[in-house]
Image (cartoon, rainbow, N blue to C red; front, top):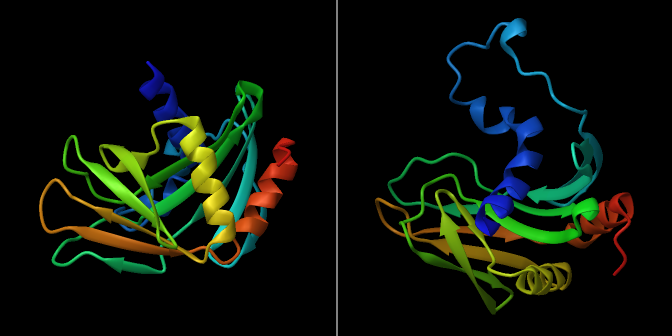
Amino acid sequence: MQRFWRTLLVVLPLLPLSDLGQAEAAQQPPAQSQLPKPATAVQRLGAFGGWTAYTFKGHSGQVCYVLGFPMKRESPGSKRKSAVMMVTHRPKEHVTDVVSLDEGYRFKEGSDESLDIDGTRFDLFTKGDTAWSRTADLDKAIVAAMAKASRAAIDGTPQKGPPISDTYSLAGFGRALALIDKACGIKR
């Protein structure tokens, strides 16, 4: 059940942004009447470096998140969707600093992946195309490391094909994080 809620925490903030990954795959744009109506408007708070901060009012209160895209992608011989790293806050649910990486390919079932933040390694578990930390304390440690570091890299084992690696610049991450902290009333 806990895994369900962690998945939900990651997926809900992406729903209003779903057109990011689908735009490339769409043959024809859907008719206006076929488009889903968003439950609430997503507000862009600002962007710094490769990181953008957003907030929206969800069914269970304010949701704030920051997302970044890799500056370097190594995926020899494979086609995959866009990758994204996110940090999410849901203060009404007492949830902060949820780290998730959607790598745009299905991870090998049961694989653990490694997130390297300026030489400090964090182990993540995978499900489908997403990787998470196992505990809230580990999430907080990852976010604290990201706020001080210059780069993060994840090495992944896809279900099919050779290993894949993405590198994220962390320039601007701390400033974007400060925006979502303020918007969701998170004190550090």
